[in-house]
Image (cartoon, rainbow, N blue to C red):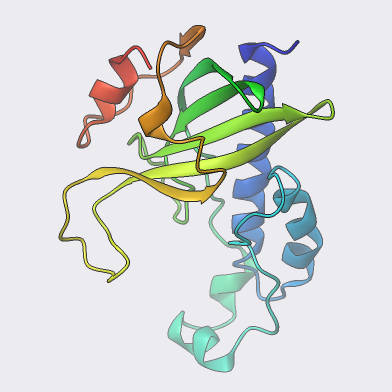
Length: 191
């Protein structure tokens, strides 16, 4: 049976590939990006939200908006998500699962140090997969950030959600997040 260190290694590889794919997305040609999409998506349990979609050709208006082709010739490298802690749980369906408490995926040249995402990892047929995700958000379907913040289910198995996290088997903390909304509280909680 797997342990938290194996999940940490899985997460680190996922975050590296995710950041690499996001960087490739900003090149003038989508050829390298498209070649990396399947690898990036392989970390998820299907079906999942294809947030990294294949793209056609870069639009001339977009090239002009960013100041010309030189912007796309050497895009800023995106940093991998930051891992703050991993908790291990038992589950009726999956036997075990792990929650990686992370920053959001980085779409800029800086690294977020805010704990905003929970990735629910399972082991299936000997491989780790991200089976669900939740985000700390105040946005609703109407698109306005006018609600109270809460952990919102993003995709995947709805039985893997913040509301069901009780009595972890083990917790490992790696890096304390910056104090954003409830980041420190979630980091220090016994969940």
